[in-house]
Structures are given as C-alpha cells and as structure tokens.
Length: 253
Image (cartoon, rainbow, N blue to C red):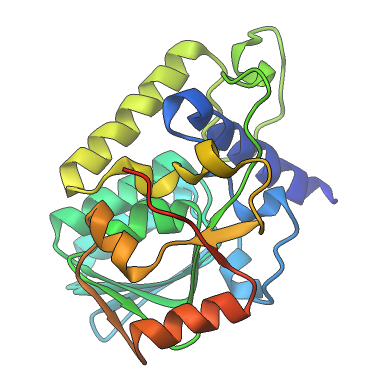
C-alpha cells in the first residue's frame, strides 16, 4: 500500500471506528480495503467538480476542499441536482455538502458509485434520489473494535499521527463527542434514521459475508429514504448489485 492510500485509510478508518460507541463505525473511506470496483474517477483526489446544464457533477474523494468548492459552485450558479461518483471520504466534509443539498432541496443522482460517506450523507440528503443503470450504493463493513469503544489513536493524546490535508482526525474524546453530535444533528435535520449508516455492525461484524453492503429499497424507506427512482427498476438494480457481490443487510430499527 503506497503512502497516499495509507493516509486515506488512516483518516477515514478513525472516523469509522468511532461509531462502535458513537454511531460512526461504517464511514471509513473505501481505501481501508482495496477498492474492488474499477472506477478511477470515483477515487480522484482532488475531486473533479463541474456544473453543466443545471447539474453539479462530482467525481472523486470527498474532502474539506471539495466541500468548499461545491459550496462556491452552488452560490455562483443555479444548480438543481448533483450527480455523484465517489468512494466517500471525510465525514465532516460530506455532512457539509449534505446539509447544503437538503437546504436547497436538490436531487441526488448516483451516476456510478456512491460509497461510505457519500452514501451516508449525500445520498439521503437529496429531495429525491435517482439510481442510474448499474450504479452502486455501498457501505463498507468494518470489524467491531475489540475494546468496544474508541480506537487507541483516538484517546492517546501523545500519539503524533500524520494527517493529510482536509482530514477529520478526532484525536480526543472531546472531538469524538463533537463529531457524534454533528452526525446525530444531521440525521435529525434531514429526517432519516441514523442507523442507515452503521447498524449492521452490531449484529454481523466481524463475520458479515462481504466487504460491501447495501440496503433494499424497502429498508431504505424504513430509514426515511423514500423518494427513490431507477433507470431500470428497483428489482433490476438490486439484482445487479447482488450479482457484483454486494450483500444486502437486514433492517435494524
């Protein structure tokens, strides 16, 4: 694993591990494990952000810089929707974008891939959600921390970890608590159950049958994501996902 992949892994796996006790377990970016879907554009860093015909096209990693770029574009132009192709990334940056999508009542299209932070924060924040043919909506599975609490990096204030630009690195319990509160407030704001992003970890980790999971249309509706439409059909989309090795998790209230 090269240095850039290590840094992406480190910054996002910390945020993911927090959810063992703070509802943040499954938000680590896809680089925690080799990303096994061939889509280099979804992994671009910095992300490519273009506005065309009233749609903002987002390709790449979600970072603080990318979030600020999205906000600038939305302020400068009339934009009705966002079309995403992203492996995810920084939690706080994704929440920033998601809040703006919700405030502006924008539609969200998953053009190719929407994984982890993209799936947790951008996707449910849309006024409506559209899944293109062959698109992937994914959360990654991470084993539960053995301690059942925060990872050692989070509570060791003497540990000097290398941070990449724009990363959210919660190195204290105070920061972890603030991140937990930020996430809870986001889901409350958009009217979606926060279990959308993490509850499979409690019942299935570390033996979940695949490294990626998703939700059925019925379960998404139970969480509060109800305005879904498809290029084909819900049945065909779910079959395409399953054929690619994506497991569908059971609903947990």
